[in-house]
Image: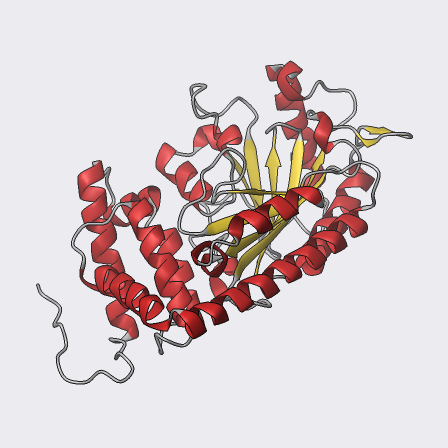
Length: 373
């Protein structure tokens, strides 16, 4: 394993918009929770437990094909800004960062694979959380990455397992497979047609749940939802992944139909919403992140409906990540107070959209709005 400074573009492959239904599904994540026998886990884990777990994992990962070329990063050795860059790329969790608890605990680390879209969180809620994050709807592929690495590590480490209950985890809701799979979706059609409540209620009835951008405890903004399984006990990993895949495909069908309803029954209103959103993103001088996400939702809808020709989904995904506070501060090379952060965010968005070329309104000629200095 190479403990180098982190790879600048690590964790960004899911932005590619290369998977199935990439205009609706931004990314797929699959992770499993594992604990090592002989060490306390969860809230009962002491410093010596966490440090011993990290050492055993480090030694085992060096002998594992999927991880030996990766970078193991101990969070206490990273500056706060870079830790938050990894959080914004969805490679870390707030729990691992120790937000509100004085920072990362001793032994907290993340290993970033140098070969596959894989990472391992060490000493979060459980000793290990093995995860894969890929573009579009690719649940089976993400699960195959995780399953292969889980098997390799299981040959090196004695995972805590009960013959009746399955894998033992800190939280009882994860006992069994320890698997959580989630699909990050953009559902403006269902929101605008006021069908989203019925769909979300239906998810709960089939054992699924939804969260915001950063997972559990985060708010939904910009019509972006993470849909994931709630139960892990009593089913195989393949059954859980297959069930989520089937339900998500049904939600995609509902969303696609809702978008067609908007075009058929409210085309003028929909086009106005989309173009207003694009105009504000293209020329605004200050944008909060919440405002950006709401505007980005309208522009993504326009790109998907071919009402904003020339805009790539990849570009919109990139804007979502690189306009978050830590990424803006990393680009500026210094801390940014909130008001200045909003100015840098708007400047970045203008620059990216300008590089894509101005999008000409369909059926509208003549005046253009020149970019002001």
